[in-house]
Length: 618
Image 1 (cartoon, rainbow, N blue to C red):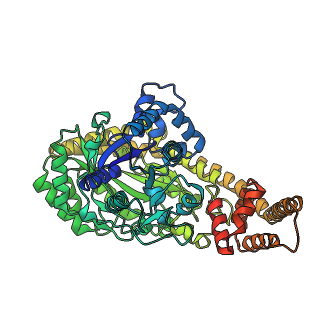
Image 2 (image 1 turned 90 degrees about the vertical axis):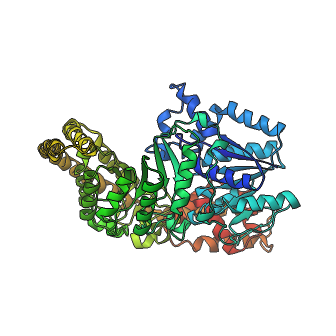
Image 3 (image 1 turned 135 degrees about the vertical axis):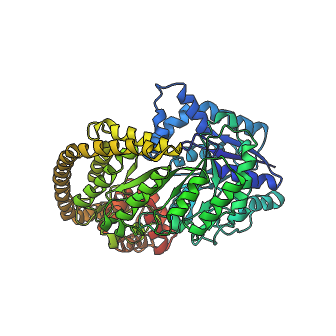
């Protein structure tokens, strides 16, 4: 039986999508005929040939991808531009009927995926539509939204489904019905809450070799090749949700990894570097040592890159082993240059330790970069300036850090315990703290200056210091005499020192601008706080007047059970103790037709209505 695997924009463009390649291998092992479609690469290449398009190629850069693809309007524009590729897929479905169309859904591909799912369901009502991927994970808080608002999705997996989905489809293919399966929401079986039935089957040691050849591999540049190495993370950062999605940090057998590497290299993909996927390849120091030894032994002369966290257990010998095994680049989750903020984030290191580790890995010839988060709850102007100073200390190393404003992600500690971090309206992108100064506008201003710091040439003397450091790294990797690779480093340090007066003047200007702007934002929030209760009462009254008017025009009888609807809604709204969250819910209800509000509430108990309103607000 035919199964279609589809990747929608926007996602990576260098290689075929890893998760669908693994799923394709699992399905083929169960004798399914698999056809893979990458609408993401199709649209990317189409727009690459037309630089004047409404959607810029830069929107695929991971520094912009979150903000650009997060709106339905942008996705609809992309959907119209991809019309030819979509029509080709639908025509293939007519000629070769499919049992199911399966999608991996990310936050950046959600809107496009939904549009295509709706069209497939309308055109082929009997075809199963199945979702998986991060957007669907139970830990990330979007599952209720899919259940209530997306009837076009027949099945979705609330965790990793690379091993359990083939079994689920095998059963359906034989019996023309589903059986309840852990980790899946199946619309034909589950009509209401509770729907969670446990975790989907996922054993990292049983994951097959990725079937990249199910895609048209000639479309990709293969600047790197993704290899699954770890899942989950040993850290429990307050802003992150990964520890909720993967309850345990699991690692893949090093022998399996080297076997897969050698298999892919034999396919003659034009690979420059391997990308070892996972949030933290250094979660277990002993495992990392073992992996490096296996790479040195079984796959010599390869280059690889990965993500890693700063930790005391990562000693110098491990970094040296990583270098010997082919590690050429590492990305660190530093997030802040303030010791106080790192502690609030639940980071297990200090800025001093981070500086020492980063300087050492550069010294032995491994390039690096790091991520920064600005506007974390509790961050003030001084702690923000410490982060800028941290970034400045590494400008000469040719870094281009990824700067992001702090988001309150479903599943994270900041989302689950907003009161602990003094966060108001955590469900909104425009969240702010009780103190009032940390608003979205303030965070965006902080991001602007952090980006300007490493991109502006006049602040850092045109990166002259960086050029000398780069030459020093080149000489180090070429194993020249010690003096030969030290003199560029000394020149770089001198130039860097002379750049500090300019930097300090700029830093002073940033301090005054951010401080004044934050003070105005605080005043704005305080004024809003004074009026929010009044606004909420007004919105409540307007909604209840609408409902009563509707009943009156429809032959409303005060003795009828219809009065229970009003009492039920009043009772549920009173349960929301957070006035900002209530404000968001009331704003949503204002936009919903009165008849729809009544129908949604009529046959539900109070707990179900509460869940429904929470879902609408998020």
